[in-house]
Image (tube, rainbow, N blue to C red):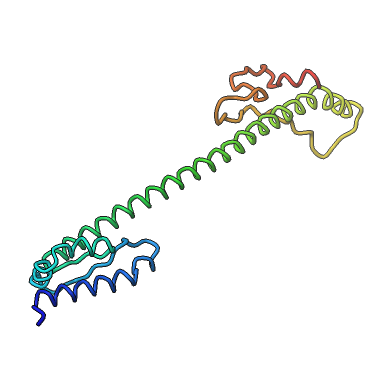
Length: 195
């Protein structure tokens, strides 16, 4: 006749093998690689261990943890803590990846902004050179029409050179004009001399 402890050990061992063969953990991408066999009372585990002391090690070797009411809560808390730590590590990796991508995009944007500033500075220089050329070479000739009796509805409005320089986003490049370069009293730039 089978004793209660022997019967319990056989039942527990059979259930351990059944759980191990199902491999529940392999069905989920992020899951602890073990299953829990819950026994509804500590006395059942005690009776099984009295007959087969190696039962816990046998179950663990098959990725099955035997739990009772006194150990289940601690086991669940440990699993929850492990999941939280995994989530923190996962979030930290995502933050690192987002930071690297943001830095790469900022670097690209900074390059575009720097090139735009250089071109704006060159456009300001070209505009000021054109204004200087107009004031010195074209308008004096046009004003002589008035001396000859030719009139217009409105006089030619004067054009003012642009004095505001583009702010540098970083170190100036070789083609970038220096912000500290003094302008001439007439508002003309060095490019006016070539006009």
